[in-house]
Image (tube, rainbow, N blue to C red; front, side):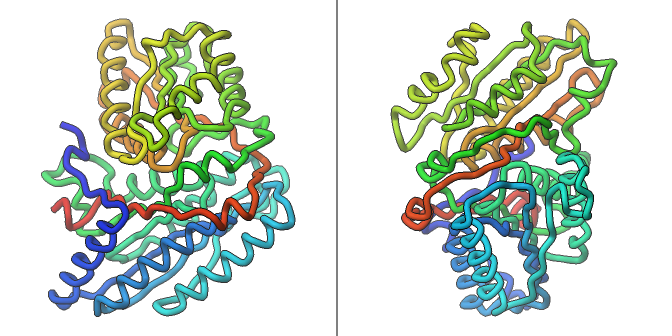
Length: 391
């Protein structure tokens, strides 16, 4: 049975209803909240929309907040225009001001200069930043991770590390209960805006998400067949090409993942055209290998990808084992669903007959117009991964 065979996912007005009910029940039971809110110190103003709604629901519910800390994850090593740098500073100031109604804020830096080391690799800096976030996890009753203004490598690393801390195995009767600690992932989702954010100049150094690297680094598994699941999104061809050239052998089985259903019914067709040269011309990937994942429901994307990974694992176990490799290049909800599938596959490894890896070519430069950022009207989604709902 899948770990999230039943799940808690809300979007739009349903998010507010869920929070109101959750906080009201806590207030009626006389229980206080000890909150760790992790957000991104980035240029994307969708994080303000998400925090406004969360804090508004919390404060009007009457639920007592015993302690609350905002941990802003900052990022170094990126090239951005002065406009985006100013927008980043303004967003951070606005988030700290909003959170001051319930608690204090501090910043943790991710990036090559996080520890003052110019030659620190991106993978090492990512691991160190993730460890710094985990140190803030103490006796909280609620952990909220808002990924709206975080780079992909940052929110994937933090979410997967938090899951490993709260759900180290699935041997208990209700593993997702996690001793009652509620882990929520919040997303200000706007796939149209995501498609307009240009990620350019992929780094020469591939980043491997902490805990999901050994399948590509262990010599004993280097001869195993490799199955690659690139989760396709707009304007990421250069990043895909970097992963393809560095880590995907010529004989690999390639299974591109497209968003479907999608708000734009032609989005999948447009992505097939965008990635035609590297995937279908150069590598001759059969169209029959294409998988489809729900654009707006991460748990449906999780179910589709997990099922495909398990099928390949079963069929290739007869020849020794396989390496399952996922590269997320799509919008946030599909990316989160793909990460949950990778987490569960890794959690279920018993006989060491397969491995899971998440390689990514992190861009060094982001480009987007301020008008596009400010015109965004995101749908707020809430994904509850652990806690009282699963007891």
